[in-house]
Length: 85
Image 1 (cartoon, rainbow, N blue to C red):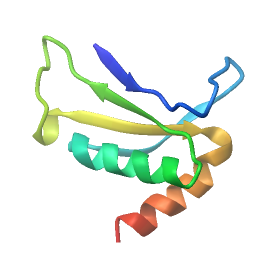
Image 2: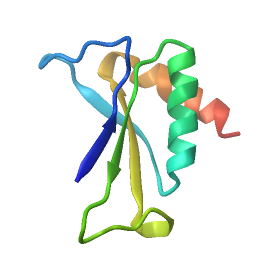
Image 3: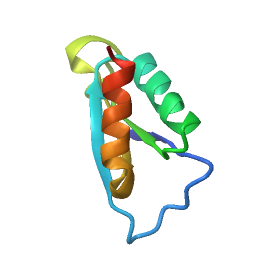
């Protein structure tokens, strides 16, 4: 099952293209990064991949990805680089 944490300030449309800017095995890191992006007005979504066949929430088996609209990709990537220093 895929679970999403949607932003409140961005209306997703079919024309909107979302791009992955970060992948981690730590859900808390993804949540913190996404909240930081939101604080600078960059909409983001978290995609956490787990299901009954892959119930792991830690380590290399857990996959958590952060997506932003394509028009925010460069800004989000630079912000994440700064935050992860």
